[in-house]
Amino acid sequence: MALILAGVILAVALAFRSENRMGAYLKPPDFVSLGGPAQAEVRVPSTIRAAAALTGFRVPAAHLFWLTEVQYYGDSDNAKTRYGLLLDYGLLTADLNPHFTENYLFGAAILAFHVHRIEEAVRLLNRGIGANPQNIRLKLLLAAIAYMNIDDTQKIIPILEAQVSLRDAPPMLVNILANTYRKAGQTQKAVALWQRILRTTNRDDDRDQATRALEQLYAEIKTGKKPR
Image 1 (cartoon, helix red, strand yellow):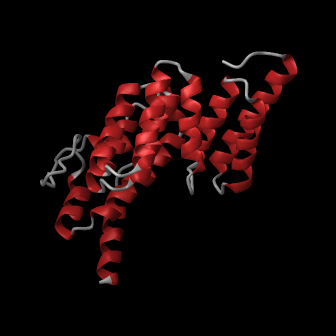
Image 2 (image 1 turned 60 degrees about the horizontal axis):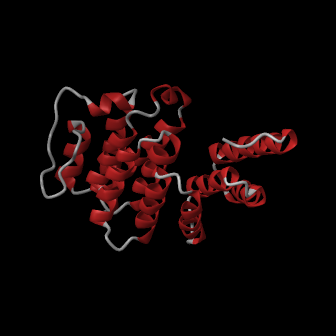
């Protein structure tokens, strides 16, 4: 069984490597549908979806999409389009593994707090809540986005604090709370959270982001400039 699973993962990985850019995954020349109640909202390449459908190994395929989604966000070239394909990647991952909650948290937080595409963030979170109705993190993030949309920082902060206090809070959510503290003038709390990221994360991009944020905050404090 282990050998079969390894073979399937390898086959799916090779299918991924055959394409150079994620854009090609979304618009390949031919498609296949997995069927069932969790129909994809965007179409995926036949090689990957066929492998998942025929073998039942949707989870490994979903994690490959997820890893590529993270890489897509980490590529600064994609910032030029404001990560225009991020929702599509999140929906692809959700279609293959609807219970992978990190996918919804990651995508929705970026869509809402970074590129300010609120409707897309809400759409992805609603998809996640529908598949995981007991997950408190998804509901907390949806509430935070709702308050952000009416610019009510004082109500956003306790919701984000509840998120960050949960075990294994993603650095991305910690960073969002730190930025919210900064905008609210709570600089000591912002510094503490960015220092927490520097102490605990093993990802270079998380460390770089926290370092840049601290440098910017220290510069604002020195010059007396108010945060935007």
